[in-house]
Image (cartoon, helix red, strand yellow):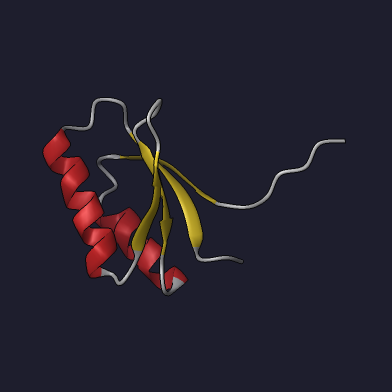
Amino acid sequence: MTNNFIVTLKKNTPDVETKKFVDSVHRAGGSIVHEFDIIKGYTIKLPDVLHLKNLKEKHSNVIENVEEDKEVHTN
C-alpha cells in the first residue's frame, strides 16, 4: 500500500473547513500533491497510513471519499 491517497470532499464543504483539512494534512507531516479543479478534492501524501485514520475521523463531516492513489490499467 502506498501513502498517497485521493480525498474527495463533499461538494458543499465551506472554504474554512477545506482549509482546516489541508492544515491537518500538513500538521500530520503530509503534503498536498495535487488539488483538483473540477471536484473539491486532493491527492495527499502521508508519512504513515495511521495518519489517514485520524484525518478521516477528524474531518468525517466533510470527507466524501478516500481511496488509494494507484495506477489504473485498461484492457
